[in-house]
Image (cartoon, rainbow, N blue to C red):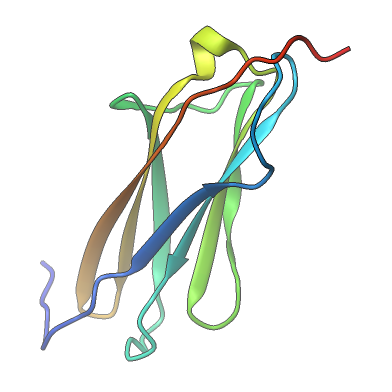
Length: 125
């Protein structure tokens, strides 16, 4: 059972590609989900992230890798989704990063939608 005492601010999510577009077929892309937690939350926090593409959960494969969540500073976290050997049909679409924060006597969820269209300029040599 989860109890919430007072108002717990929702985390702020920011989703972006690490390298600039356009992408080439065959290269890799990294999408970063940055999660910033309000400084007023002082209890230990567990952060989990779920990635989706076009409404479907993304499962890790040898081509699609989710880098473990890492702490950045005292109130920020990041998750990176790495897509190896880009394919226009397999990787174009709308990406969603959803986070769940739990700790102490609360549970907070928040999501941010990131859309991009993979631009194919040719093949990587």
